[in-house]
Length: 342
Image (cartoon, rainbow, N blue to C red; front, side, top):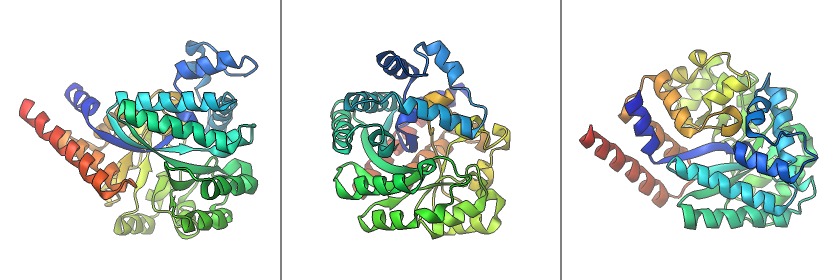
C-alpha cells in the first residue's frame, strides 16, 4: 500500500465535491479565530481537533456554521480561498469545483459584490501562482429555507461571476424536501448553470429521485443511499449520472456506520460513474489523497485502477473538452511513467 500511497500523492487529480468553508485548515481556522476572539471556535490547533469530532450530522452542521461565523469581511474570504488552493496544489489537484455558500456570508453582513470579488481575486491568483484551476458551485444552505434559495439564486444569476459554473443544494436533508427548490434550480439552469445538489446522504433513495426529477441533477453529491434502490442504481448507470462519493465524510457524519460497510463497491459494480472526493477535509481529518487510498482499499485497486478513478473525476467535471483532454493526458502520462519506474 505504501507504493500506492506514493502513486496517489503524485497523481494529477480533479476534485468535484469539496466545500469552501469546510476546507479551512486548522491553521487558518485558528488564525481566523484569533482575529475574532468573540467566536466559540478554539484558537489552538490541538483543541480544534477535538472541536471537529462530530456526534452526528446535526452536530457537524452546528460546528460548520460556527466556522462560517469566522468569515467577517472580504479579506477573511480571500485568505481562506487562496489557502484552500494552496492545499489542493500540494496534493497535485489541477482542477477543483469548490462548493461555495454565498448566503452564509452575505447574511452575516458581507456585501455580495465584495464576497464575489474576494473569491474571484483568489481564484485568478491561484491559477497564476499555484497552477490550480478553481471553479465555483454556488449552493443553497437547505437549513436556511427559501429566503436563502432566493438570495443564492439572485447572486448566482444576477451579479456575474466568471468562475461560476454550477448550482447546488447542501445542508441537512432530513426535513428539507428537494422539490421545494425546483423554481430556483429552474432559474439557475436557464441562466446556464449546471445542477449538482446533495442528495441521499442521510436520507433514502427517494431524495435522490427528487433531485433528479425536480432539480434536474447532472451529478449527485454523496448519493450514499442509492444502493438501496436497484432501479435507481440502474438509472444512474444507464444515464451515466456521476456520484460524488466522500467516504470519510460519510463515516464522520454517521451517514455510514463503518468504512467496510461503505456502498462504494456496490455502486461501481452496478456500473455507476463514481468520483472520489474529500467534502470538508480538515474537519474530517482527511484530504483527497487519503480518500483515494481508502477507495483503493475498498475497491481492491492497483495503480491503473486508481488512475481510472482520477479519469472519472475529469469525465464528470464541467471542464471544457480541451481541459479534459489535457488533464486526462497528464494522468495517462503519469501512469505510464510510473509503470516504467516500477
